[in-house]
Length: 318
Ligand code: NDP
Ligand code: CA
Image 1 (spheres, rainbow, N blue to C red):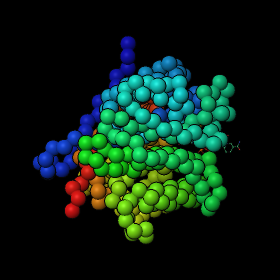
Image 2: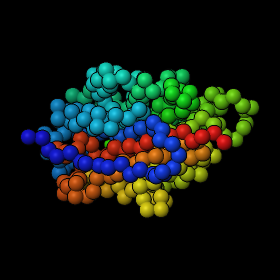
Image 3: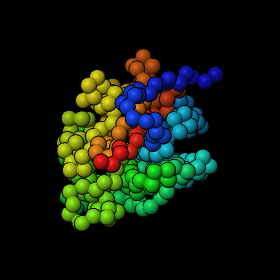
Image 4: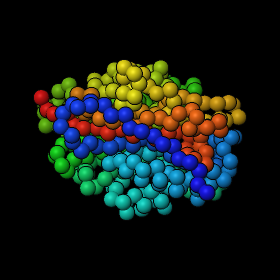
């Protein structure tokens, strides 16, 4: 007997606007590290059996296969080499993994190695051009958080795309560190875009569209969020498009119960270049009723974070 899955629908934007294209589907998801879920997280309302790898692994793969993104950005991956890399390679994805230097997974008995960020892309849609694994710094001091950045070329349009995946420092009291890590990531992105753009250095922006997916561990009121909005890279957060008027983030991207209480908040984002990319569709969030009284993770859903899925198109050049 398998538990019910969430039935989520896409909200389509720009109705009737422009010719139908084949959009680029992007997924952002903190999948919950196996070692952390079983070992350190204390999800007190989630049955242990629902946290077992044998159960969770199929639910995670099922979620990926349900949406089949062209670009897949994951955090808390501690089963890259034995599961996600080989399984997704068989489905036509290339990938890049960057483990955290001192992953908290390593503190858990029977762990499967460090967790980290992983970027997967559909090889039939994109050609690999360049990538960097970054250890994020704060005021020049290396931290325990990382990012993967890749430059890809769309095979059908010939256009380049820069994709980043990151997972910023968790917990309250570290707002300043998240802000510094976010600034460091923006600085790296600016440098990489400059390297791949044919134009005089010092030009204000590159015309390579940017996608930044992450668990920022920051609500929309935090400094790091404001910094991304105000960055000269002209970024916006795609999930705002789900709201009436398109100005506010969803109410939650994660919802869990720990001994310290219930935590229902927005921490995960898909940032995109608003001058060069258009959001065509956004996958809605499950309702409180669908999520259920014991929240996440559960027998129905393998992570405490919900996946974010959006369809993007390149805007026509002016
Ligand atoms: P973070 O504080 O960024 O969090 C690590 C993980 O814990 C995240 O995946 C986060 O999930 C999860 N988490 C967040 N809140 C809670 C909570 N209330 N209870 C349980 N888990 C939570 O970790 P760091 O990368 O800074 O690493 C912290 C640990 O790593 C240390 O405790 C230490 O064991 C080890 N470490 C060791 C070092 C060394 O020199 N040996 C150096 C640095 C770290 P989410 O993002 O989903 O909220
Ligand atoms: Ca976590």
